[in-house]
Length: 148
Image (cartoon, rainbow, N blue to C red; front, top):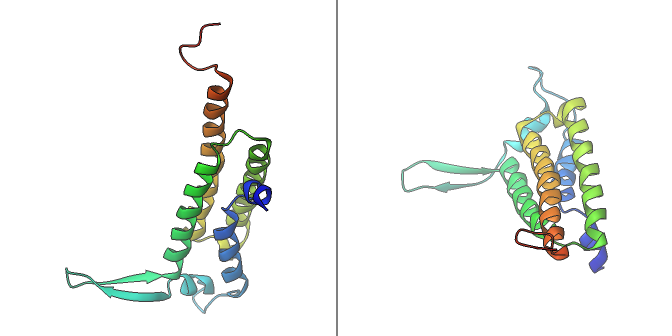
């Protein structure tokens, strides 16, 4: 179970949540706006602020919040130099490519929410590889100040 958690990138969670919402929101209204836009803009709750404004927390905001949390977990996981980290990077690249293709080619995925999820996947891949390289250099003792 621990190995599975290390290999599986958690960025699949917000992508999968968005995929479920997009699957059940097919079609568009009379103006040509995809139905998913209305679902993502649906307010989950309102909170009155001190300024007198009502702050709305929407479904799209929740998905982005989940994406930020999973991105943070992925960056922490990328500090590992085990062989499972390589598998994690490979699957992260797969999720990034899938997200990019969905964003560019499928109408329900061409929203700002999914654009930010896709950018989180890109950051996951870039940060994961960079952090792993730095961590591996330190493990091998090839960092600054090493005289051989």
